Length: 333
Image 1 (cartoon, rainbow, N blue to C red):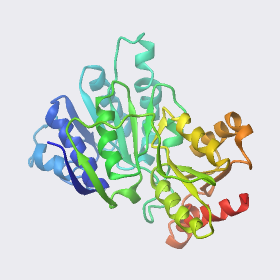
Image 2 (cartoon, rainbow, N blue to C red):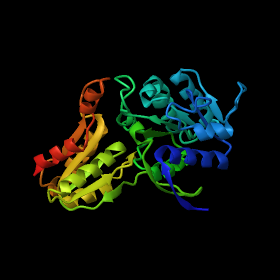
Image 3 (cartoon, helix red, strand yellow):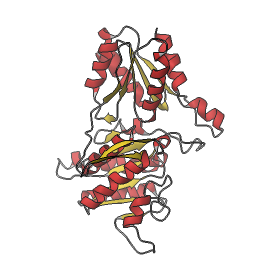
Image 4 (cartoon, helix red, strand yellow):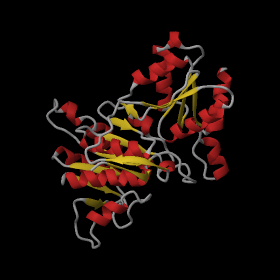
């Protein structure tokens, strides 16, 4: 029975996967340290408690894998082609780099190459982006890389409600889905309408704050940065609209364009490196398709084009915050 409860982003994600595993015995989860260790960010804690084995016997529902991303991405792809619905957790999405051949050349292509005969229902998920002092090799924002690949779907929810509903949609999808979870969101809380039948559709952005002077467009953790910036700018007398993209591939340009055509100014905010990040794609599309509606050039706020430092004071300089967004907005005035 549907009910509204307060959950953290992590708890909403856990509950969503658990409900899907309870409904369909073909749903399984695999990855590094997801079993007895319960995941690097403890996302699989409740799943292991219910489905995991405390001994070393084989268990198909919760599979601890060796440190071989290409290997278990390939195993999951084969399992999906055979009719299972695997959820693959990368310890960090930075490690998905080691599985790019499997994901891009096989997982994303098999439906097309088989003329639609073979389906590949698989979810690749895990923490992506900066956490806290994870340094240069564990802080990549990979969503833009994957959103470049036909055959994949890429989503990046920002709220407990959306991670709950979008994970269910991802598991049900017969196509491979990249499910991007910024580690800075795992602890945030929000009211979640829980319902085993709830699904949040892909390809649908949402307006989290109405405004008339400027549109702030982002996804994942940057949505919260944009909301904070909008509060600051309100004190300047600016009415700022905040668009949460949520789904990168497919991308809801209709909602984005409608916002820009209303406010006539746009700033796109993303944590990924500013050069070549997915926010650059959004900005480019706005510039091409809404040129006559713009009163100023489309602005971008992205991460610094440097490897992520370990020192916290330097790390914070590389990640956009609300002050960076406010500064970009004021340049447009």
